[in-house]
Length: 236
Image (cartoon, rainbow, N blue to C red; front, side, top):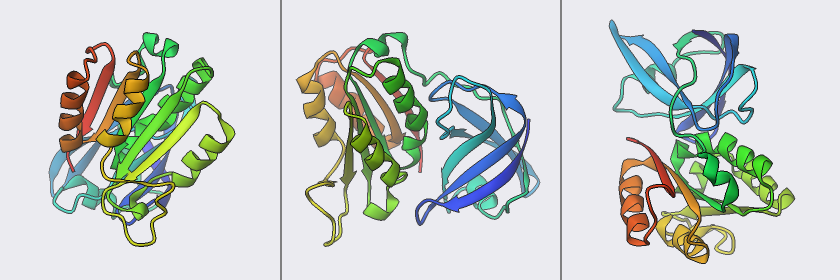
């Protein structure tokens, strides 16, 4: 499927937001991704990127992606050189990292790092729409405050939605970081007490491979079953 880059915006020093205008309407399920096909130095390459758009479940003519530059990679350096108006080849939305039906009945904790927050934009909105009476937490880890994506939007959602709770976590804080709002450390110390409050909680984890590996060990150690936690991980 052909897509035109309609808008490019800097979200952080290393992450850009790409708004794609599609040649036809598509429907995506919260948490899904698209596969980008690019020819770089004569070689056809494919990379998967989570859909960061919120409007799941209904036909849409645009998709939003938030993509981090990998200087050692091949596709993201090529993509970051593209301009608005450039044409891309992408797949239909796909992937199984989606909300389980049983999640609608329980509290949910979303755990992510970096651009791992992308699929949670639609997943959180779907959770709040399906059942506004349970708690929905976002535990979002980054190295610095400048790396936090959609920070103002999460703050606003927490202010206007009583059952949504935002927990930003910074591993390399600077001297000006507000300790009353930002947690210092890693996501594991933040999500574990939330789960201990309600052992029936469902946990969705997306982000860096190292974080996902440790989270899987932590959740198993806490006694959660495979029907309670779900993963999507990436490198870089």
